[in-house]
Image (cartoon, rainbow, N blue to C red; front, side):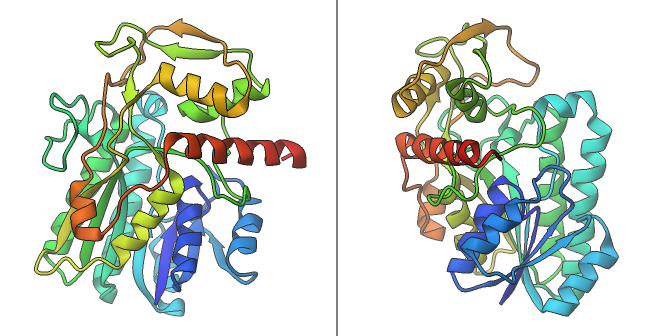
Length: 335
């Protein structure tokens, strides 16, 4: 029972490594560290095993994938490795298509050739674009509004077609907005580049790293004019991947599941919650909307509960508390 995790040093990937280890699986991590810090591995090994196997390499490089699958008896793959910034995907779309699609093709080809039974794909709610009806179900039409979202949807099509033509079982997880950190404070979200996700930026303002938050748009048709998102604890997402590995799809070859809380939170509501958790003010200024920004999106996760036995257990306060604990620990260690 060995799982290959691509992008296992990344934010959601690292938490899934820990969750699979706790569930009793051997794990092999493949990451090129283009968007992850190398010291994450120290945190992972402290939470799993000192001899956790970590390989630096490209998830699109077939010889590397073949070697790892053969050497370690891989029977399942969880594929996280991808470029994932919506604004960046507009600036450099070809990089996103090359990296995200090529890696998926290489991995699924090797999986099909070697008879690897389970493939779990890290997708995103961005594939839904601007949903007209809320909450979003798995039957909501996909209409991505960015090159990043388009690559995720393209990879989904590749995987579902490959599963139908082989003995492989594919689970696609469309998760919403990951927040939080491991309760130990040893792993969490620390992007190499300037943070673009809302919560790390908010926490940076609370820490004094930035003097104010830019709120992109206050003219949406929402209860306070700011965008609404479904924030979900990264540890809950990790548990969702464990459930996906254990899933019995019956006669189905592939299945799509939303992972979220089913609760929509506005930007202003999140700012207020973060100020309460940190005990610090969060100054902000209003800026124009960005390309690809969506007014409102939150999940219907009833399928995941019914078929995977999964539901989000942690609320927004817990997400922000764990995120703040991790940020403070990093600051204390000078990391």
